[in-house]
Image 1 (cartoon, rainbow, N blue to C red):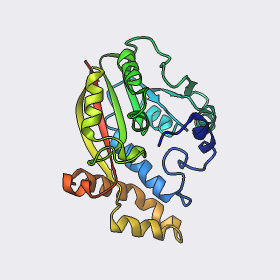
Image 2: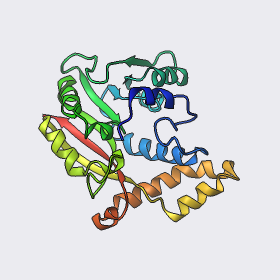
Image 3: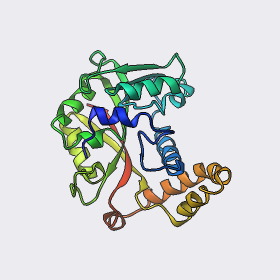
Amino acid sequence: MSVSRSEWNELASLPGVASVIDPADSFGLKNQLIDHVHWQSLRKALCGGSKVLDFGCGIGRFAARIQQQGQCYLGIDSAWNMLASARRRNSAATSFVCFDGLRIPLRDGSCELILCCTVLQYIMSSPDRDATLAEFHRVLAPRGRIVMCEHASVAGRTGSDPANCSTIQDYMDSLSAANLKVIATTKIRRYDLSGITRRVLRLGRYARGVAVPLLPLLAKFERRRASSSDEQTLRNIPYFELVIEAEAC
């Protein structure tokens, strides 16, 4: 599924994080859970750089959390409405910039750390893939890092949905071709949530105040469950999510 810029602009008005995770989650609890999974998985990997470029930042859901770690933040996106939402949700001191979707508005070698969360999965099968990855390499300083959180599938390109488009090896090969060396991959969430997580999410429809405090703990549980999953288990589900860390060669 290739989402156009106009479609992203339409999604920007959805509540919570639905515009950048699952628009169909009308209750929002599953999206909150996934947001916890993402941030718990990205937080440590994003340490070590004084500045973070959030490529395809959407509504800027990581901006405040990155700034709270003492890092400078710049979010860029090609959808105006997403950026307008990001500015409403964050302080006036947070920087958000609209760009053309390809040419990153930074000088060569000026970036220490790039965050790319659920963005590259839409680009992997597009004609812009190699140019986008070349841009990552261009703006990264020597040994600069990129941290990605993306959907992947053991089965590979089984459909047009980004969840089924790329294997881990697809990502690794594409990054390597752009002189970006993969240094770590970590599975963080399976498509099929555990029984206990599904029960808590159902409970939350009637007792939200009970379910919400449990979400961070459930996120940790789902991360451990995903990281220990073998290939055969992953082959039987449509997709899983992983964090990929790469370094500019």
